[in-house]
Length: 81
Length: 436
Image (tube, rainbow over all chains, first blue to last red; front, side, top):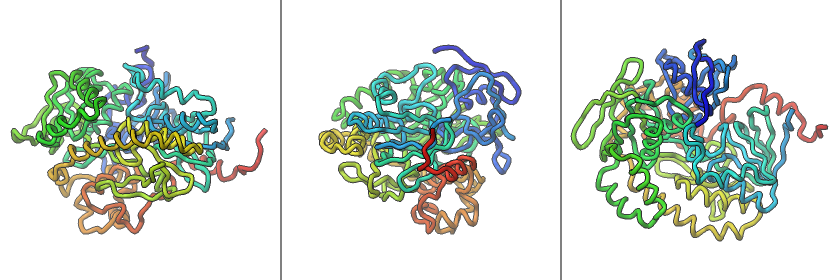
């Protein structure tokens, strides 16, 4: 395993291993990924881009699947818009 | 700017074991090959890159296809529309028109995820889902994780979770003990599989494996706190941080449907229909691997090679693989028998249990609705971001509002949500126009 990289989730710094997904970074912070239309907290179910429960805003772009997005140093992720 | 219109002899969708083998086989005949996958890395689910362990050794040779002469590898690129002779795909290079003479569908499988009380709580994932998340750095160190559902994937998922530091509370397989015993007795016919099973059990030494044991509910306020199990020893509640529960795999037929390929029944789900040379009902479109029915990695590799050869116009090397294909498919048949779902699992969801997680639609809202179209119109079930992928598959398994019985049958484009700009770029650009 190589090093780690630092990104930002909801304004807070988070470190994840190189090669991790943005989803892993949100999980490290331990917040829900989104609220359902009925207001329930949600987090990833399928891990492979099918369920869309992990959608978040990444570098200003809304509705991206965090599980399909590799984390990059300096990336800004925000949950639950 | 990269070339937005690309032309291939053979276009392969999906870069798992089947797609990689198809690309390699087609390229070996000198074909110009495009290989596209929505994931940022090749390997599919079974060969997904692991942040701790890297790439599986077996995958290394297969991955050589990515750099083979004549292969254009397009990671992170999602096919969204099917037009005559080309697919529209969107990804890091913007919208692409991928034109082909022959198309190989190596779209793989999805996990069968079924509703039960509490399944929407954060902390509940699929079994394969948990494995995929773990491989991509999901924090598991010291977490109490229970693995449940059905099939050999539970062992593979559990081994990965343990390697990532999870404290495994046990593996709860719904299949009864006698079915598992019969399976073990017949396994030596596939020595490779028997060794694989043994290796997994070794990696899982000390972890309880319970047969006939079903997760009936997940409990928690805003995250998972406890899992409720119903097994041969009665009901129990276990404190738990993560529940990884999946009931096996179903073929991903979305793109095949969009192309108009004939599907056939595979239990309560559907698979792409193909002949002995893996030709689908649509001229020039081939399929390989899990899309043809769940057969596993070895089967996918063989079929991928077959489809790649035939797509490049070489039938003889494909025919030479037929016997190996039949042997691999026979193993899949054994799996289906062994891990057939207990009717208890179909009865877990209650009227108040959400089935559509995108639109928060409970099972009770679908009572008396005849098909998936009516369910959409009356309840919005299946109309959210996942476009019915999770609830539609679950409802097909439960036999409620079955999508294939719908007057709205077949998938509508786009296959996945797509940027409007991707559509605009592609349809305002003239494919005949030569770029400098």
